[in-house]
Length: 178
Image (cartoon, rainbow, N blue to C red):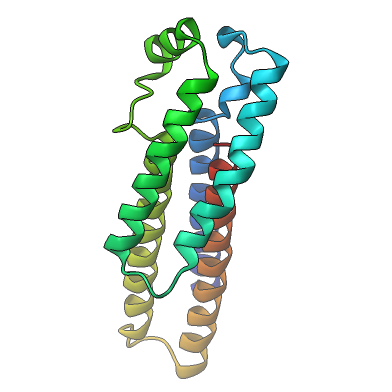
């Protein structure tokens, strides 16, 4: 009975991770893949070059442990504003209008990358809260023996790690498309 419940819990966690994956992937693709913008090969090359330049800069800010979360956010926003300004200089006015009509504003106060990152961060926070609640439920279950409790906690931790790594990989892939 207990093994069945544990298997059910792991299955639910896995299914929820896969269902979220398709939502995020369909939400965002790289700008160079949009056919209705009619980008030239030169524009696509310039956009990809810009991404290769800015991507490591964003990552460096995120990995800098000397900065507080607020400082990281400020630096990333400043870098994102520069990125958007450069992106707007690559696109012609008609392409910018098409982008804004169909996909939203391409202005300094708008960032799809930030929105996607926030979505993944919220999903990671929810996963963390769910893991802590499930762990406490196992710890507080008086009907489990010591070995059963350890086995369930280990299985829960492994499922949590798999789902967390999956979310992080999807976040990295989604941000890499920007």
